[in-house]
Image 1: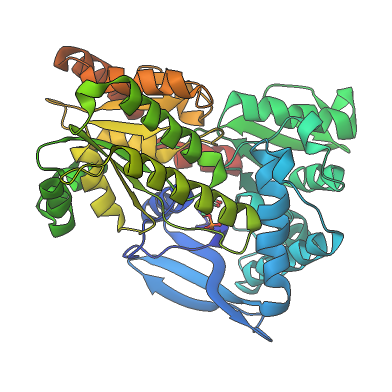
Image 2: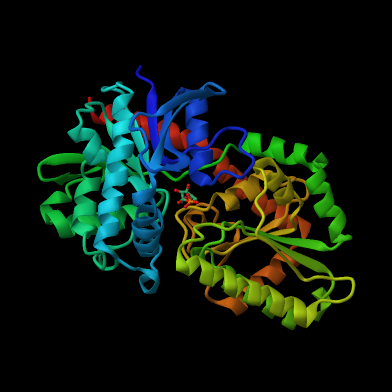
Length: 458
Ligand code: F6P
């Protein structure tokens, strides 16, 4: 069987010192099991980058990475990817902006990454492209003669056509997605939204079956493949990390107080401002908790050149300062807000210590932190999960305390309920959520996608 070629904007090494996102966790798991090559950006910009990739190997995984050109990068990454597509896919039309030259840069980078794949010479190997940064790569791969099955998985939400059509080139984007043999989504809602876009671009006759659409006579497989986690590996790493120095420092710093924890990349889609307000409502309305809980929010900076991210950073600094100014005491800081990143195993160790984990994005494709929190708990004395009903994970983790993240007083009430949840209730909820995670593991995610992809071209 031909080994897999995985393509994504960033690649992640197994021993990276920063925490990998959901995409990297999933791809690493797939490549560890099936072997293969991971193609993407080297992390370096150059004035005239070489077109052929640098190939290396790390823990049995082959990496083929390319430098990207200075001239196009900002327009591609901060522009079309994170100024146009990201806000649109997360239903933030007010943060959406469009510049045709940025779309040209997006095409140029997609073509460059596709050429790096082609230069590996494995023309009939299955290729699995990941996420919104590389939608157009499939078209270039086909044009350059790759003739194996080519699949695409979208890690973030897909917007309904009524939102998508704000993008002037939306039809071209949908046509590009229809160049793949298989297009996978996190939830049924995302797939349904994709169908709305295919219907708009190709007409009602394109929607023929649950498993595929027909675009300009091409059969394009579609499916829902919710990304999961490796429950046993996470449980073991989280338990082992209890002896890690950083985890012990966190625990010592709590001085016996309950821990409310949030772990999110700093992004407006994560609902952090709303969460900070909810926490303030909790302190206002529950004097019995004053001095008895510490909220630690870990939020490493991201996409710092995009204006919307600078704005959200300012808003959070203000909100944390406001809450601490109002409620802190000489021996208590209610919110500890950190822009620092931690290695993945340390974060798992933190998650295991949390009495309550707040995962309240206003929109999220899946959110693996929610799943990792559940897997990291001690089943004898598990913490409670407060989860946004706007995260893909809410479709599976129905035994979390589900909230609408915009309803800040309801989130405050859920946080209070979570802090006070009796042990029997926590155990029962945790056991049910763990059973769900065991049914849909990370292994199931990549195996089912790759099996469907391989069969799509037979
Ligand atoms: O999961 C969405 C995603 O954009 C991934 O594609 C990406 O690796 C991660 O978030 C982090 O984003 P960025 O690469 O922009 O820092």
